Image 1 (spheres, rainbow, N blue to C red):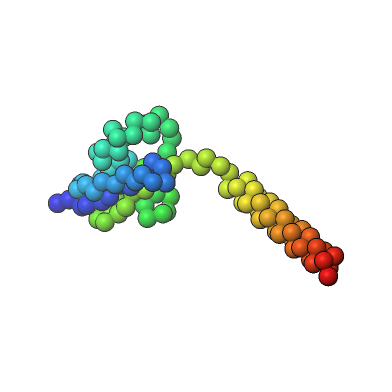
Image 2: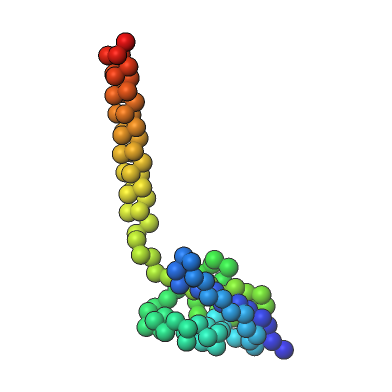
Length: 114
C-alpha cells in the first residue's frame, strides 16, 4: 500500500516546481523530499538549511506524511518584512505629500489667475 503526496517549491515568483509521488504510508517528510527529485533539480537546497511545511503549517522533517499531503519547501526571506512594510509606508506618505503640494499649488495658481 502507498500514499500519494505532492512536493512544491517556488524557485522564483514565476517558477514553480511540483511533483506528485507515491510513498510508503510510514514515510517522513525528509524521505519524501529525498525521493521527490527536488534536490536533484535544485542542488543548492542541499547546501542551505531549508524550512518546509505541510499545507502552510511548518513541520519537522520527522513528521510522517498522510495521503494527499502537500509538502511545501520555503525559500529564505530576501527582505525583512518589517523593513519592507516601513519602506512602503514611507513611499505612500511621500506620494500623499506630493499630491497635497500639487493640489495646493494648483489652488494657488487658480486664485492668482482669477
